Amino acid sequence: MRISGRMLVPISLAMVLATAACGLSARASGQAEVPRSGPAAGSAEQNPVSSPTPEIPTDEEIPTRAAGTFTRAAGTGRVIGTGKKRVRYSVSVEKGIAWGDIPAWKPDRFAESIEQVLAAPNGWATSAQHPVTNKAVNLSRASWSFQRVGTSKADVDVRLATPRTVDRLCGASGVDTEGVYSCKYGKTIMINLRRWLQGSPGYPVTIEEYHAGVINHEFGHFLGFAHMKCGALGEPGPVMMTQTIDLGGCLPNVSPFVGDGRFVSGPWAPS
Image (tube, rainbow, N blue to C red):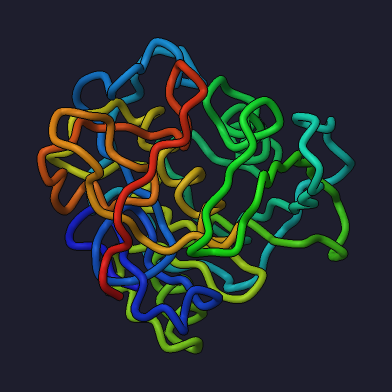
């Protein structure tokens, strides 16, 4: 999928399983990107990480290629949530990334960040208290829980990789990530290192909120959701919306639920 400068859009409904270039952009299918400026809607509850905003590296500082193979975070994580459907996920980081002066995102650090997003208020685990019904994707009172596993026997593998590697692996599934976007295909979510480090310029959220948006968006694709449009002017945008491309009158929002437990949805976007 492609993300117009900050998020990706599904290439076609038939490619929901090959969701690529996700980041909340609008051309490919599978990422949920969020940039880095101000607070998103309800950010006090949504923001999973409250650390000082890191310095944003330039394009020149970010490695564009590495080994093309991956190191998986070891061990088993805690169970997140009490939803009926358990999603077992693994976390991997590309080997051989030359981090230079950039603080390294080793597998354990990347895994911790993902766990914080999934465990945060208004994340997908909130479905246990507020089951999701959506006839368009054949969901009736659906709820999910999550657990990281350190083996290849996972339902989905979340990978952090350099732009060239993302382009190669997503491209093999027919998704053009253009050296910038992320993607989801089959049982793999590819997170583009450039977007992970920089966010999506012009989209008014912090880098931590951007991380939450990308992970929630991509997991949303894995759970079966395609892209959505703004549901109502002045309301939080669906996390499955390509918000970094066009908010369409909605407010920035990086979580699937809002404070009252409402699942934020909108009309399906053309794929």
